[in-house]
Image 1 (cartoon, rainbow, N blue to C red):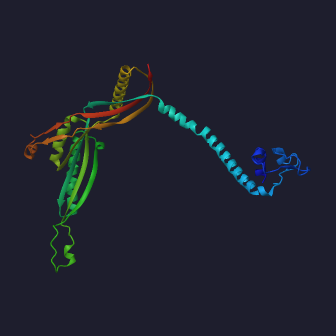
Image 2: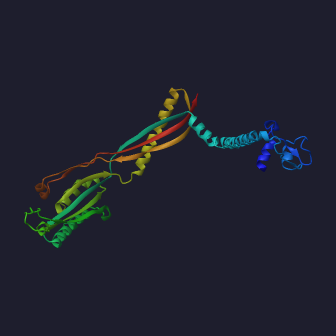
Image 3: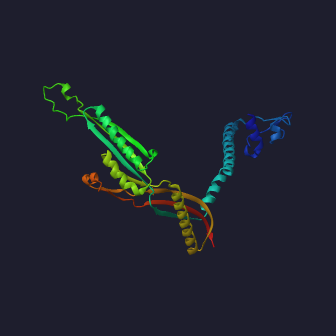
Length: 319
């Protein structure tokens, strides 16, 4: 009631002609008080009753309209407050987005010869007795490792990548209509042991010799050669420098052609650097020639491609 009285006192009494406000101590016919001081009792005033009963419905309708106007007014002030606060961040982003820009990208590329080769060998043995098969596999692998050491390959560059023991089974028999289930259970008839190693060779002049001698002393599987770089980081950084220089040159050319001024660099994005090694090509002479010592391996290392991209975003303005 006090809240309604406050707002009623603030509003102009002309808006409510059917209501009469009386001051305490005055007769009903005295001059009405229509200000806020009389409402809150500073002048010991109070809200008078509606003197005309016939206007009761209009009185209720007026109060309802007044409450609706009050709520709308308060909501309006709240929305105005938000409108003064929220656009601050939005305007900052819009200003940055509205700035004229020039985006350029460039790729740096260089081909370098590899300085290491990784050879993948395996020793595979098969037999009926697992212990005998494992022993033979270990003896053959020991000869392979010893040969690598004689070729001055340090043990830290020789790594076992897999060691598998695989049971061998006969072909599954046909199950006769009256046969038992036990006849379909597979039985082990032997074992296969496969020991695979990777050998990193940093002296590329002996790659062919390593392949020939390792196959001669015990390895009976050769999976291939993968070329690489001992340290990729210097080449990656150089490629990024090349890409950055190309991007800057491209931006300067475009700005000069379009009569624009490069104000500043706003963003720099690295698109990544890739190192692509060539596929190793390998040819071994016949087994007879290798046994006689007259065989050899023809190795072609090729080159490694290093590529990197850089994107520059400039703020621009007319000259």
